Amino acid sequence: MKILIVDDHKMFCDGLRLILQQLEGEIAVVEADCGSAALSMAALDPDIDLVMLDINLPDGDGVEVLRSFSERHPTLPVVMLTASENRSLMRRCFEAGASGYIPKASSASIMLNAVRLVASGGNYLPLSLVLPTPQEVSSPGSTEDGSKLSKLTKRQAQVLELLKHGNSNKQIADHLGLSEATVKVHISAILKALHLRSRVDAALLAQRVGLGSN
Image 1 (cartoon, rainbow, N blue to C red):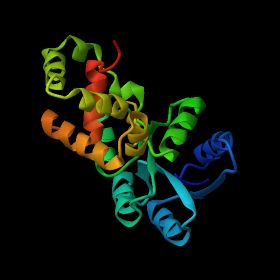
Image 2 (cartoon, one colour):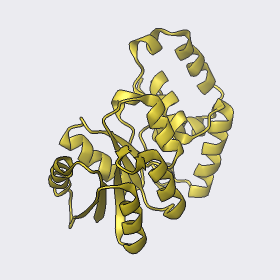
Image 3 (cartoon, rainbow, N blue to C red):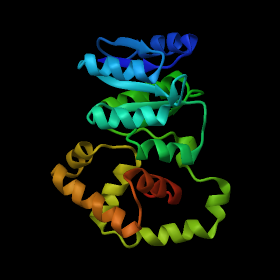
Image 4 (cartoon, rainbow, N blue to C red):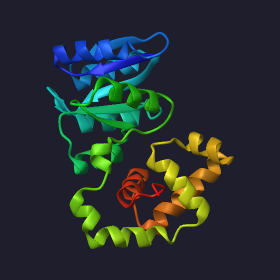
């Protein structure tokens, strides 16, 4: 697997490179110190399998670079690296096409598991940003969120439970014995029933109300 790290902090890149070498199989790591260089490298090297992209880059907003990756290389998974543990920023990244969001303060094991999940076709959301805060647990909104889930069919609830854990459509299909096309139909129905915009919003809602945790 070839991984492109996009970050202008050499010390962080060196540390991340050492962590990534712990992944199974042959791992090749290449680096770019800005968004324009990263996009050029991806255009010239079709063997890049995954991009790890810093939010703050010397030549612009990392989210805008992410959008460019999504437009030019829609099948290339991009994991955002950030010092910010901000839910609205995480949503913005996923809406722009991210496959993962890793706070830079995460442990090596968390980073490795996140990369494994994204490389297998899933989405990684940090628990610190998806678990409900004490205020959310005690708020009326949590009860309202729970009542929304009652609108779902049993199969839709099963799909949402797997979505909550970052599973890809293929992984959900394999687990439930469905086709990927059927999974897509269920996800569209879930988003419509819950009045949500994206699968990430659905996963966050499921985490917030503790779907499947009982």
